[in-house]
Figure 1 (tube, rainbow, N blue to C red):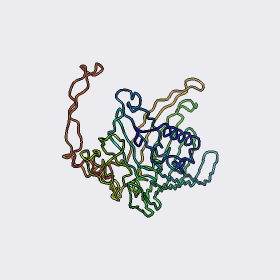
Figure 2 (cartoon, helix red, strand yellow):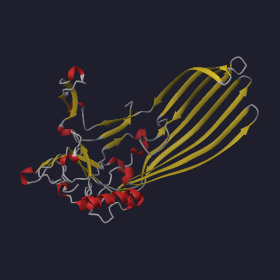
Figure 3 (tube, helix red, strand yellow):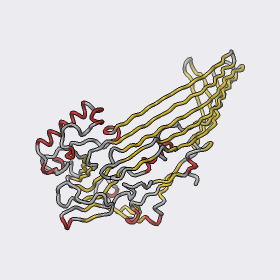
Figure 4 (cartoon, rainbow, N blue to C red):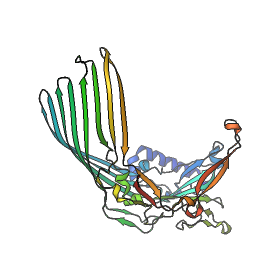
Length: 403
Protein backbone atom coordinates (compact mmCIF):
# COMPACT_ATOMS: atom_id res chain seq x y z
CA UNK A 1 0.00 0.00 0.00
CA UNK A 2 2.73 2.44 -1.02
CA UNK A 3 1.34 5.83 -2.11
CA UNK A 4 -2.08 4.25 -1.90
CA UNK A 5 -4.00 7.32 -3.10
CA UNK A 6 -2.11 7.21 -6.42
CA UNK A 7 -2.67 3.54 -7.24
CA UNK A 8 -3.38 2.93 -10.92
CA UNK A 9 -5.51 0.22 -12.47
CA UNK A 10 -2.30 -1.45 -13.61
CA UNK A 11 -1.06 -1.63 -10.01
CA UNK A 12 -4.26 -3.38 -8.93
CA UNK A 13 -4.20 -5.73 -11.91
CA UNK A 14 -0.60 -6.70 -11.19
CA UNK A 15 -1.44 -7.34 -7.57
CA UNK A 16 -4.44 -9.47 -8.48
CA UNK A 17 -2.19 -11.38 -10.85
CA UNK A 18 0.24 -11.97 -8.01
CA UNK A 19 -2.55 -13.36 -5.86
CA UNK A 20 -3.48 -15.84 -8.60
CA UNK A 21 0.14 -16.90 -9.02
CA UNK A 22 0.47 -17.30 -5.26
CA UNK A 23 -2.70 -19.37 -4.91
CA UNK A 24 -1.97 -21.61 -7.87
CA UNK A 25 1.63 -22.36 -6.95
CA UNK A 26 2.02 -21.74 -3.25
CA UNK A 27 5.28 -23.63 -2.87
CA UNK A 28 7.02 -21.71 -5.65
CA UNK A 29 5.52 -18.46 -4.35
CA UNK A 30 7.00 -19.19 -0.97
CA UNK A 31 10.43 -19.74 -2.50
CA UNK A 32 10.35 -16.61 -4.67
CA UNK A 33 7.25 -14.73 -3.50
CA UNK A 34 8.22 -11.42 -5.10
CA UNK A 35 9.93 -12.68 -8.26
CA UNK A 36 6.87 -12.59 -10.51
CA UNK A 37 7.59 -9.44 -12.50
CA UNK A 38 5.89 -7.05 -10.10
CA UNK A 39 6.98 -3.72 -8.70
CA UNK A 40 8.28 -5.40 -5.61
CA UNK A 41 7.99 -2.67 -3.02
CA UNK A 42 4.44 -1.84 -4.02
CA UNK A 43 3.20 -4.83 -2.04
CA UNK A 44 2.21 -3.95 1.50
CA UNK A 45 0.25 -5.87 4.11
CA UNK A 46 -2.51 -3.75 5.70
CA UNK A 47 -4.87 -4.45 8.58
CA UNK A 48 -7.99 -2.27 8.48
CA UNK A 49 -9.90 -1.35 11.62
CA UNK A 50 -13.47 -0.14 11.15
CA UNK A 51 -16.06 1.64 13.22
CA UNK A 52 -18.46 2.21 10.33
CA UNK A 53 -18.28 -0.97 8.27
CA UNK A 54 -15.22 0.04 6.24
CA UNK A 55 -17.34 1.36 3.40
CA UNK A 56 -15.30 1.70 0.19
CA UNK A 57 -12.10 0.65 1.98
CA UNK A 58 -12.14 3.49 4.46
CA UNK A 59 -13.22 5.99 1.79
CA UNK A 60 -9.87 5.70 -0.01
CA UNK A 61 -10.88 5.73 -3.71
CA UNK A 62 -9.52 3.02 -5.97
CA UNK A 63 -7.77 1.10 -3.19
CA UNK A 64 -7.60 -2.69 -3.34
CA UNK A 65 -5.52 -4.46 -0.70
CA UNK A 66 -3.17 -7.07 -2.13
CA UNK A 67 -0.13 -8.34 -0.30
CA UNK A 68 1.94 -11.29 0.75
CA UNK A 69 0.55 -12.49 4.09
CA UNK A 70 2.68 -12.01 7.17
CA UNK A 71 1.52 -15.36 8.54
CA UNK A 72 4.50 -17.64 9.19
CA UNK A 73 2.82 -20.77 7.87
CA UNK A 74 1.40 -19.16 4.71
CA UNK A 75 4.30 -17.00 3.59
CA UNK A 76 7.19 -18.82 5.22
CA UNK A 77 9.49 -21.63 4.18
CA UNK A 78 8.77 -24.30 6.79
CA UNK A 79 9.91 -27.90 7.05
CA UNK A 80 8.77 -30.38 9.69
CA UNK A 81 10.50 -33.74 10.01
CA UNK A 82 9.51 -36.72 12.16
CA UNK A 83 11.62 -39.85 12.60
CA UNK A 84 10.38 -42.71 14.82
CA UNK A 85 12.04 -45.98 15.71
CA UNK A 86 11.09 -48.68 18.20
CA UNK A 87 11.66 -52.28 19.27
CA UNK A 88 9.92 -54.58 21.76
CA UNK A 89 9.68 -58.17 22.95
CA UNK A 90 6.69 -59.98 24.48
CA UNK A 91 6.18 -63.10 26.58
CA UNK A 92 2.65 -64.45 27.01
CA UNK A 93 1.37 -67.44 29.03
CA UNK A 94 -2.09 -68.27 30.26
CA UNK A 95 -2.02 -65.97 33.27
CA UNK A 96 0.89 -63.67 32.48
CA UNK A 97 1.62 -61.20 29.74
CA UNK A 98 4.96 -59.39 29.78
CA UNK A 99 6.27 -56.78 27.35
CA UNK A 100 9.43 -54.66 27.28
CA UNK A 101 10.68 -52.27 24.68
CA UNK A 102 12.40 -49.14 23.49
CA UNK A 103 10.86 -46.19 21.63
CA UNK A 104 12.32 -42.98 20.30
CA UNK A 105 11.38 -40.08 18.09
CA UNK A 106 13.20 -37.09 16.65
CA UNK A 107 11.35 -33.96 15.59
CA UNK A 108 12.69 -31.14 13.46
CA UNK A 109 10.94 -27.77 13.12
CA UNK A 110 12.73 -25.57 10.58
CA UNK A 111 11.15 -22.19 9.87
CA UNK A 112 12.05 -19.18 7.76
CA UNK A 113 9.68 -16.22 7.57
CA UNK A 114 9.55 -14.67 4.11
CA UNK A 115 7.77 -11.33 4.17
CA UNK A 116 7.46 -8.35 1.83
CA UNK A 117 10.79 -6.68 0.96
CA UNK A 118 9.90 -3.43 2.73
CA UNK A 119 9.42 -5.32 6.03
CA UNK A 120 6.40 -3.27 7.13
CA UNK A 121 2.77 -3.87 8.03
CA UNK A 122 0.33 -0.96 8.23
CA UNK A 123 -2.75 -0.69 10.41
CA UNK A 124 -5.45 1.82 9.44
CA UNK A 125 -8.64 2.85 11.20
CA UNK A 126 -11.36 3.84 8.72
CA UNK A 127 -8.63 4.58 6.21
CA UNK A 128 -6.43 6.58 8.59
CA UNK A 129 -3.06 5.00 9.53
CA UNK A 130 -2.50 4.65 13.27
CA UNK A 131 0.19 1.98 13.64
CA UNK A 132 2.86 0.14 11.72
CA UNK A 133 4.81 -3.02 12.49
CA UNK A 134 8.47 -3.49 11.61
CA UNK A 135 9.68 -7.03 10.84
CA UNK A 136 13.03 -8.74 10.47
CA UNK A 137 12.28 -10.88 7.45
CA UNK A 138 13.98 -14.00 6.03
CA UNK A 139 14.15 -14.92 9.70
CA UNK A 140 15.49 -18.36 10.60
CA UNK A 141 14.05 -20.20 13.59
CA UNK A 142 15.14 -23.85 13.68
CA UNK A 143 14.75 -26.42 16.44
CA UNK A 144 15.23 -30.16 17.04
CA UNK A 145 13.90 -32.41 19.80
CA UNK A 146 14.57 -36.05 20.67
CA UNK A 147 12.81 -38.31 23.17
CA UNK A 148 14.05 -41.81 24.15
CA UNK A 149 12.24 -44.23 26.43
CA UNK A 150 12.62 -47.74 27.88
CA UNK A 151 9.61 -49.53 29.35
CA UNK A 152 8.42 -52.78 30.86
CA UNK A 153 4.87 -53.88 31.64
CA UNK A 154 3.22 -56.93 33.16
CA UNK A 155 -0.37 -58.19 33.18
CA UNK A 156 -1.24 -60.97 35.65
CA UNK A 157 -4.59 -62.67 36.27
CA UNK A 158 -5.32 -64.86 39.27
CA UNK A 159 -8.87 -66.12 39.69
CA UNK A 160 -11.08 -63.01 39.94
CA UNK A 161 -8.20 -60.51 40.27
CA UNK A 162 -6.31 -58.88 37.42
CA UNK A 163 -3.25 -56.75 38.13
CA UNK A 164 -1.32 -54.54 35.75
CA UNK A 165 1.97 -52.78 36.38
CA UNK A 166 4.40 -50.81 34.26
CA UNK A 167 7.47 -48.66 34.65
CA UNK A 168 9.01 -46.33 32.07
CA UNK A 169 12.23 -44.34 31.80
CA UNK A 170 12.22 -41.24 29.57
CA UNK A 171 14.99 -38.93 28.47
CA UNK A 172 14.22 -35.84 26.38
CA UNK A 173 16.54 -33.23 24.87
CA UNK A 174 16.23 -30.31 22.46
CA UNK A 175 18.70 -28.08 20.65
CA UNK A 176 18.94 -25.31 18.08
CA UNK A 177 21.35 -25.74 15.17
CA UNK A 178 23.74 -23.02 14.01
CA UNK A 179 21.69 -20.06 12.72
CA UNK A 180 22.24 -16.65 11.14
CA UNK A 181 19.90 -13.65 10.91
CA UNK A 182 20.34 -10.73 8.51
CA UNK A 183 21.56 -8.59 7.02
CA UNK A 184 18.14 -7.13 6.19
CA UNK A 185 16.62 -3.68 6.38
CA UNK A 186 15.87 -3.59 10.10
CA UNK A 187 18.83 -5.78 11.08
CA UNK A 188 21.66 -4.33 8.97
CA UNK A 189 24.38 -6.07 11.00
CA UNK A 190 23.98 -9.88 10.75
CA UNK A 191 23.83 -11.99 13.91
CA UNK A 192 25.16 -15.56 14.10
CA UNK A 193 24.44 -18.14 16.80
CA UNK A 194 26.30 -21.44 17.28
CA UNK A 195 24.51 -24.73 17.91
CA UNK A 196 22.76 -24.26 21.25
CA UNK A 197 21.57 -26.98 23.68
CA UNK A 198 18.23 -26.12 25.28
CA UNK A 199 16.62 -28.96 27.26
CA UNK A 200 19.68 -30.97 28.29
CA UNK A 201 18.13 -33.17 29.54
CA UNK A 202 14.87 -34.25 31.19
CA UNK A 203 15.03 -37.63 32.93
CA UNK A 204 11.99 -39.33 34.46
CA UNK A 205 10.89 -42.69 35.81
CA UNK A 206 7.12 -43.05 35.75
CA UNK A 207 5.04 -45.86 37.28
CA UNK A 208 1.58 -47.02 36.24
CA UNK A 209 -0.60 -49.43 38.21
CA UNK A 210 -4.07 -50.86 37.70
CA UNK A 211 -6.25 -53.53 39.28
CA UNK A 212 -9.67 -55.04 38.52
CA UNK A 213 -11.64 -57.44 40.73
CA UNK A 214 -14.71 -59.46 39.73
CA UNK A 215 -16.74 -58.72 42.83
CA UNK A 216 -19.24 -61.63 42.68
CA UNK A 217 -17.44 -63.97 40.32
CA UNK A 218 -20.18 -63.80 37.68
CA UNK A 219 -18.42 -61.35 35.34
CA UNK A 220 -21.08 -58.66 35.84
CA UNK A 221 -19.67 -56.41 38.56
CA UNK A 222 -16.10 -55.15 38.68
CA UNK A 223 -14.22 -52.87 41.06
CA UNK A 224 -11.37 -51.07 39.28
CA UNK A 225 -8.58 -48.76 40.32
CA UNK A 226 -5.78 -47.00 38.45
CA UNK A 227 -2.81 -44.91 39.47
CA UNK A 228 -0.02 -43.46 37.40
CA UNK A 229 2.21 -40.61 36.38
CA UNK A 230 2.04 -39.18 32.85
CA UNK A 231 4.58 -36.84 31.27
CA UNK A 232 3.83 -33.86 29.08
CA UNK A 233 4.51 -34.86 25.48
CA UNK A 234 7.92 -33.83 24.20
CA UNK A 235 7.58 -31.42 21.28
CA UNK A 236 9.23 -28.42 19.63
CA UNK A 237 7.61 -25.77 21.78
CA UNK A 238 7.41 -24.26 25.27
CA UNK A 239 10.44 -25.22 27.37
CA UNK A 240 11.99 -27.20 24.52
CA UNK A 241 12.10 -24.02 22.41
CA UNK A 242 12.58 -21.43 25.14
CA UNK A 243 16.36 -21.30 24.87
CA UNK A 244 16.50 -21.03 21.09
CA UNK A 245 18.52 -17.82 20.62
CA UNK A 246 16.53 -16.78 17.54
CA UNK A 247 13.35 -17.04 19.63
CA UNK A 248 14.85 -14.88 22.37
CA UNK A 249 15.59 -11.84 20.26
CA UNK A 250 12.72 -9.66 19.06
CA UNK A 251 11.57 -10.25 15.48
CA UNK A 252 8.90 -7.55 15.23
CA UNK A 253 7.91 -4.34 16.94
CA UNK A 254 4.85 -2.06 16.85
CA UNK A 255 4.97 1.74 16.63
CA UNK A 256 2.20 4.32 16.83
CA UNK A 257 1.95 6.34 13.62
CA UNK A 258 0.42 9.60 12.47
CA UNK A 259 0.67 9.93 8.69
CA UNK A 260 0.71 13.73 8.76
CA UNK A 261 1.45 14.22 5.05
CA UNK A 262 -1.11 11.58 3.96
CA UNK A 263 1.26 9.73 1.64
CA UNK A 264 0.95 6.31 3.35
CA UNK A 265 4.72 6.18 3.78
CA UNK A 266 6.40 6.02 7.20
CA UNK A 267 8.41 9.24 7.01
CA UNK A 268 10.63 8.71 10.04
CA UNK A 269 14.06 7.27 10.79
CA UNK A 270 12.82 3.75 11.39
CA UNK A 271 16.13 2.47 12.78
CA UNK A 272 15.81 5.03 15.58
CA UNK A 273 13.69 3.38 18.24
CA UNK A 274 12.80 6.59 20.06
CA UNK A 275 9.59 8.53 19.49
CA UNK A 276 9.96 11.08 16.66
CA UNK A 277 7.76 14.02 15.74
CA UNK A 278 8.81 15.26 12.29
CA UNK A 279 5.50 16.86 11.35
CA UNK A 280 6.92 20.36 11.43
CA UNK A 281 9.40 19.43 8.68
CA UNK A 282 6.88 17.59 6.50
CA UNK A 283 7.39 14.12 8.03
CA UNK A 284 5.29 11.97 10.36
CA UNK A 285 4.93 11.18 14.02
CA UNK A 286 6.29 7.71 14.88
CA UNK A 287 6.04 6.34 18.39
CA UNK A 288 8.80 4.53 20.27
CA UNK A 289 9.48 0.83 19.81
CA UNK A 290 6.97 -1.27 21.75
CA UNK A 291 9.99 -3.36 22.77
CA UNK A 292 13.34 -1.62 23.13
CA UNK A 293 15.28 -4.82 22.38
CA UNK A 294 14.21 -4.88 18.73
CA UNK A 295 17.11 -4.97 16.27
CA UNK A 296 19.67 -5.82 18.95
CA UNK A 297 21.35 -8.97 20.22
CA UNK A 298 19.85 -8.49 23.67
CA UNK A 299 17.64 -11.37 24.74
CA UNK A 300 14.21 -10.40 25.99
CA UNK A 301 14.11 -13.26 28.47
CA UNK A 302 16.22 -15.00 31.07
CA UNK A 303 15.73 -18.70 31.70
CA UNK A 304 16.21 -20.31 35.08
CA UNK A 305 18.43 -23.29 34.13
CA UNK A 306 16.67 -25.49 36.68
CA UNK A 307 13.63 -25.80 34.37
CA UNK A 308 15.71 -27.20 31.49
CA UNK A 309 17.37 -30.29 32.97
CA UNK A 310 17.23 -32.79 35.77
CA UNK A 311 15.22 -35.64 37.24
CA UNK A 312 11.48 -35.07 37.68
CA UNK A 313 11.59 -31.56 36.20
CA UNK A 314 9.53 -32.23 33.07
CA UNK A 315 5.89 -31.08 33.37
CA UNK A 316 3.67 -34.01 34.29
CA UNK A 317 0.49 -35.06 36.01
CA UNK A 318 -0.55 -37.80 38.41
CA UNK A 319 -3.85 -39.64 38.03
CA UNK A 320 -5.82 -41.66 40.55
CA UNK A 321 -9.10 -43.38 39.74
CA UNK A 322 -11.50 -45.76 41.51
CA UNK A 323 -14.73 -47.05 39.96
CA UNK A 324 -17.42 -49.72 40.11
CA UNK A 325 -18.94 -51.07 36.89
CA UNK A 326 -22.07 -53.24 36.75
CA UNK A 327 -23.81 -54.91 33.82
CA UNK A 328 -27.57 -54.22 33.97
CA UNK A 329 -28.46 -55.79 30.60
CA UNK A 330 -26.41 -57.63 28.00
CA UNK A 331 -24.02 -55.12 26.42
CA UNK A 332 -25.34 -52.34 28.72
CA UNK A 333 -23.58 -51.32 31.93
CA UNK A 334 -23.39 -48.43 34.36
CA UNK A 335 -20.27 -47.15 36.06
CA UNK A 336 -19.70 -44.88 39.05
CA UNK A 337 -16.23 -43.60 39.76
CA UNK A 338 -14.00 -41.06 41.40
CA UNK A 339 -10.93 -39.59 39.75
CA UNK A 340 -8.35 -37.07 40.80
CA UNK A 341 -5.66 -35.44 38.71
CA UNK A 342 -2.93 -33.07 39.86
CA UNK A 343 -0.32 -31.35 37.71
CA UNK A 344 3.28 -30.54 38.57
CA UNK A 345 6.19 -28.38 37.43
CA UNK A 346 4.46 -25.22 36.27
CA UNK A 347 6.57 -22.44 34.76
CA UNK A 348 5.79 -18.73 35.15
CA UNK A 349 6.91 -15.65 33.21
CA UNK A 350 7.92 -12.56 35.20
CA UNK A 351 9.02 -9.31 33.51
CA UNK A 352 11.85 -8.20 35.78
CA UNK A 353 12.09 -4.83 34.01
CA UNK A 354 8.69 -3.79 35.38
CA UNK A 355 7.90 -3.60 39.08
CA UNK A 356 4.39 -3.19 40.54
CA UNK A 357 5.19 0.46 41.20
CA UNK A 358 5.76 0.97 37.45
CA UNK A 359 2.06 0.59 36.71
CA UNK A 360 -0.48 3.38 36.90
CA UNK A 361 -4.25 3.22 37.00
CA UNK A 362 -6.70 4.74 34.58
CA UNK A 363 -10.43 4.80 33.93
CA UNK A 364 -12.63 4.71 30.85
CA UNK A 365 -16.25 5.64 30.32
CA UNK A 366 -18.49 2.91 28.98
CA UNK A 367 -20.42 3.93 25.85
CA UNK A 368 -24.10 4.74 26.10
CA UNK A 369 -25.83 1.56 24.99
CA UNK A 370 -29.09 0.00 26.09
CA UNK A 371 -27.48 -3.44 26.15
CA UNK A 372 -25.10 -2.37 28.94
CA UNK A 373 -26.09 -2.19 32.63
CA UNK A 374 -28.10 0.97 33.32
CA UNK A 375 -27.73 1.95 29.67
CA UNK A 376 -23.96 2.53 29.87
CA UNK A 377 -22.28 5.85 30.46
CA UNK A 378 -20.65 4.71 33.71
CA UNK A 379 -16.98 4.81 34.68
CA UNK A 380 -14.84 1.66 34.61
CA UNK A 381 -12.00 2.15 37.08
CA UNK A 382 -8.98 0.28 38.43
CA UNK A 383 -7.47 -0.51 35.04
CA UNK A 384 -3.69 -0.77 34.88
CA UNK A 385 -1.08 0.10 32.29
CA UNK A 386 2.72 0.31 32.40
CA UNK A 387 4.11 3.80 32.85
CA UNK A 388 5.69 5.35 29.76
CA UNK A 389 9.24 5.12 31.12
CA UNK A 390 9.07 1.30 31.25
CA UNK A 391 6.37 0.57 28.68
CA UNK A 392 8.86 -0.94 26.20
CA UNK A 393 11.21 -2.48 28.78
CA UNK A 394 11.22 -6.28 28.62
CA UNK A 395 13.35 -8.73 30.60
CA UNK A 396 11.24 -11.83 31.07
CA UNK A 397 12.31 -14.49 33.54
CA UNK A 398 11.07 -18.06 32.96
CA UNK A 399 11.23 -19.86 36.29
CA UNK A 400 9.48 -22.60 38.30
CA UNK A 401 6.16 -21.48 39.70
CA UNK A 402 7.32 -22.27 43.24
CA UNK A 403 10.10 -19.63 43.09
